[in-house]
Length: 418
Image (spheres, rainbow, N blue to C red):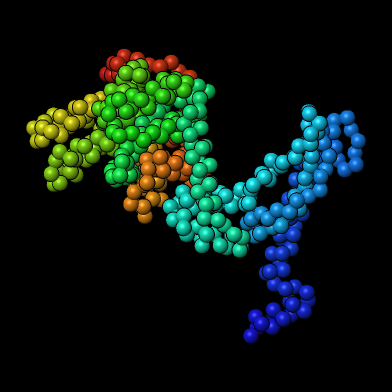
């Protein structure tokens, strides 16, 4: 009852509630948009209303009514028009860059549509979910398809962009497996992902490629493409244990340091032992990768190999397969050890991707999976944060590249002397 009395009092004062407020907001939005486009047109024509100048490129030509969807609802605009002087004497129509010819929505609504698509919302439900934002504005079924098509175009340009201007110090390479349809059948296929770390510690998604496997040829194609686009040999490459990837890296970047992912290796070690031995293997392995310095890590490594050669030969052989490439990160600033000993930078992208597509059984094509993964980063839904210890990048990246074997020997001799 109290609310009804308040409403009547407001109406008597000339305030008709939320509808009147929204109408006032839409009117203000309309006037501002029309003013902005009018200023854009006059700047392009080189003259204002009734102004005579030598630089005049055309003249005003009335206005045209346009319906635009904004976050404040549907707005009917009187869009200013203009005619340009053509070289052959013909008049050409002027078109606004701020409000493109066929735009029916503001970019904020387009971003919302793309964000929902990338967030895993079924495209058929977009209209229902966006109803409060659209405020009754019609949305065709093909609108989301056109926006996704635009995203495809951006992705293809991104795949070909030059990389020579970037100076990546570290590069992560790993595969993300997705289910997609190929030749009429659904199968699990790898998306080969590459993330670089700049001299300022910024993580940048460099490449996404759908391949049939993680073979040496597949990874070699990815790395060769990066080199062809101008990518310089990085100082450090962080990879999993795939032999195809390791072979490709050694062939193309022979001088780069290689760090084997500690997480992948631990999973591999556990796969060779029964469950009752997992805690003990995990404890021994953590003594290696979480050691306070290289010498202690090397001692723990040798002890684990010796111990498990007797208790479980397969575990020891798997550890020896990775060798001291598990310890490469000790050559780098301690503040970066956590970031460099695993490929978690790509695992994070994988996690965010799966969180948004958990309702989808499979993708219609491999390209659809690529577009979605790229869009998560391009739209800012997945943020690529700076590497831990980024403040140490400048000093370290300016130093000359050490000889890996020589540096290990020098470090060991210094520790023994101490």
